[in-house]
Image 1: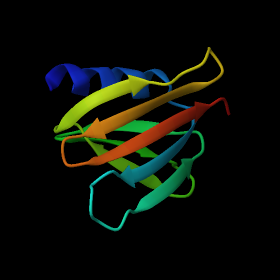
Image 2 (image 1 turned 60 degrees about the horizontal axis):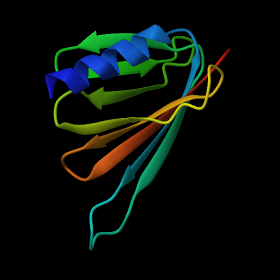
Image 3 (image 1 turned 135 degrees about the horizontal axis):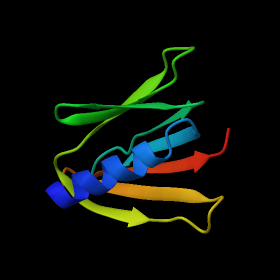
Length: 102
């Protein structure tokens, strides 16, 4: 799991200052599915104990991701201007993050 956490931290910090779009969904069978979307402009990345937070300084909008319990990280990028990844967690939910130039 530590390898996945390091990969996530490296990816997000490498793109600090860009715009982030994060979508949270669950994949748990026999439950009502949920999803949330958060768009962060000109993101700042904060590494804290047990989590990484991506925030928008001017508005205070943010999303936080746990860095433990990561099952798999999928790179879904399609070139230098289409950066994306999906983080799948052990508890049955996943987060899709797409990164845009400001």
